[in-house]
Amino acid sequence: MKAKRLRSSLLLALTSLIWGAAFVAQSVGMDYVGPFTFNAARFIVGGIVLIPCIFFLRRVNGRENGQMDQEMKQKRTKMGVIGGVCCGIFLCFAAMLQQIGVSYTSVGKAGFITSLYIIIVPIFGIFIKKKVPFNVWISVAIAVMGMYLLCMTEGLSIGKGDFFVFLCAIGFSFHILVIDYFSPKADGVLISCVQFFTAGIISGIFTLVFERPEWSDIFRAWAPVLYAGVMSCGVGYTLQVVAQKDIEPAIASLIMSLESVFSLIAGWIILGEVLLPKEQFGCVLVFAAIVLAQIPVPKWMVRGKKVLN
Image (cartoon, rainbow, N blue to C red; front, side, top):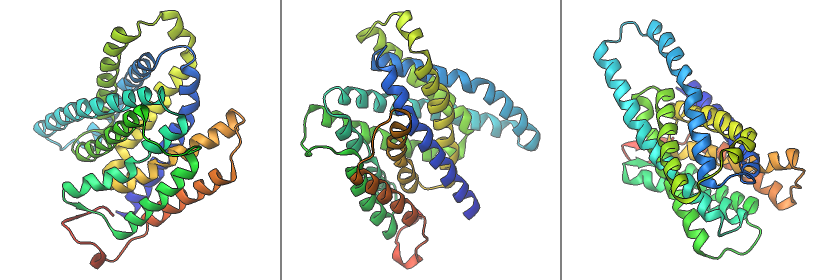
């Protein structure tokens, strides 16, 4: 079990790296198309990329799980489709709310408020009978301080954009918890593929209503769209679904908060942006929080039927 948890932690860290670098692609993509168009394009690309993966993995798993009866296979397929639709709805609206919020607030404030899902996930977990160990709560507090140093460049005040981004953080929290529920019950790649097509179709409807882009603009944004679609969606979100089978959502959200750290590093390497001393210290705090969350605690420190550790 410890080996599976370590593997999941490493996969989620890789996911955060991919997502962090995707901020560069998203920034460049906005030069050509609107947020709804960009989301629709990348989600559809992500879904298309995963279609051959589903058939390949089914053939491999079919040989390994030859004894699995047809009824069980149908049940897992049905759960994969249902889970993918549910995940896709939350993913789509969380991404939309984030894009809308960013248009009214600064990127730094948006990044910090979005990262609040690392607090919201364990709080929501309490309501579904998942108790949180003491060290995870300490890790969350340290990570929030680190995220503040990483993202905030001005005083914290509540405005229209901040409210939309906070709703986005709630949406991503639900997305993590929904994945936690469905990922052990179905094939992770199928869930991921269905969620992308669901999110892409919904985003496409909003695109037709609010943006009506030209095809030439979409083709001009081919490079960032392909990275965001293939790597951020096709690879990143699929790794998230697969990895969350063997790790609890509170710790998963902490590891995925590395996204902001990697986005700063990607900006430094690719765009030549400079990391301030406070940002460097923020990175250290986030890493320390993730390491602390991995340390097992005695059972007497946690009460409850299910433990997020």
